[in-house]
Image (cartoon, rainbow, N blue to C red; front, side, top):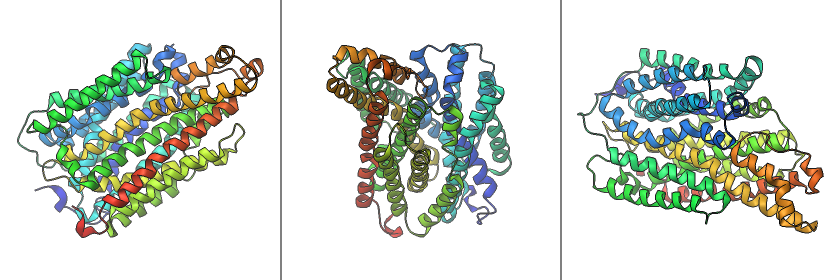
Length: 511
């Protein structure tokens, strides 16, 4: 019998929620603080320009590729045991990262950290499912996501301050500190649920998931140089083939890493796609915020980190309220509301972005994006966890982070592809209006395109280009950003419509 029979009040299980929420949040904070401070790290370690983006996303890609396998392993070997192992791994790897002598060493550490974070992410939500009584779970999820919001709002600012005050190496002490606290709370308050009879891991399925994802992200990233280029279409073809083989494999194997039968449920399918979409939007927005803030608005990294801070407590309160509303009604209205709030954040940037826009508008757009993503996440978590049968909480709960990390990995690549596409269209029109040839204009923006392709979130182009070329590159870039935000805002809008049509209106019709 699981620990769901333990204390029924929220106050009594608050230490459990806090420990698991801390663990869950580390998987977001760890890569986020590195990405926001990548310019300082890359300069200090002489990271090749073409490798900066890969270094920043290395851990995320490993998490996305391996989190499904971790969920199944947790069901077999122990969810609590695997979570604690992941937390210890994160501590060790980050401490080693702090003494990195060069780029190669840090890259290896980031890949290893991806394995540790996959273990943490893959089982933390599953442990919440088995440790909290079902009637308390929606409220617990609200508190869980509120803790995540507060830490994700505060940590980027702290990270920027740490880098400026004492240097980039101290940045790698933030995640270990949180991991130590999560480790203590987990060891003291979380009970190990019963495990299933030992069974094999679907190694072939895990490998196909990894190949599908890695080649997809690589192909999309290369697509900015032309989708017809060999470097772009070959990985996309490989991704498509691997995806088909994955579906065929998972339909036939008795213990699939991804149980496709779950997707026969409309609510579950919508929830999984919502997890992918919200993480896609958050990661892509953070990427464009770094680009736009540093290149056009000339904001330092610490200021960009502070953009996440305003309204953090309000969002945390809203997420707690969302959890209670899910328990009282269903996840459906909360999910739709969260998605529509994210649409509002995207459309606000699409409507107001200018090279001289007021900083409070950027803060408001960031706030709306964060609010919508956390509210949506609460509804997604409850929907996914409600479909987990006894003994398979890890395998089912891992679907949410698997889709989420896929979106997180795809977001920057797709946003960059769209931004480059629209930016090119804008400066070509600008050049044509000024009577400049394509080759002349291309030379003028080469530094900007290179910076966007290879150094996400860094100020990579020389403002003197504006005077040398006669092009208004700041306005061209901004118009490209506005078109990008307009296009991506269609995704949560379409998913909100799907949720309205496919998710149950009453608790009695939910699975």
